[in-house]
Image (cartoon, rainbow, N blue to C red; front, side, top):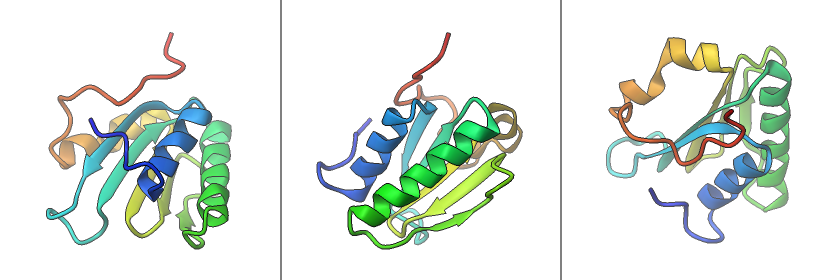
Length: 121
């Protein structure tokens, strides 16, 4: 699984998720398949507090890196937070909510291993 071109917004997002100990990170290549974005990244946090913190930090990192201000939906509830940075759309979930919506299967990606499973016991 590609980790994102060095210096790209995709790489910045994956690095942000790793720094914040996101779980079960999956990156789906959409370029040529959909006009919504080039990549979709899906990850889980252990609690609504962690999901909200990851979303807030990621939005700030994207802005500080000069990619503009991303659109963020789903705060303060933080069961499912969507971050639209243009080229990359990020979905951050609590595990139960992620299982319910199962976006990986919807995009035909449900049988492959995640990029990382940081924080798994």
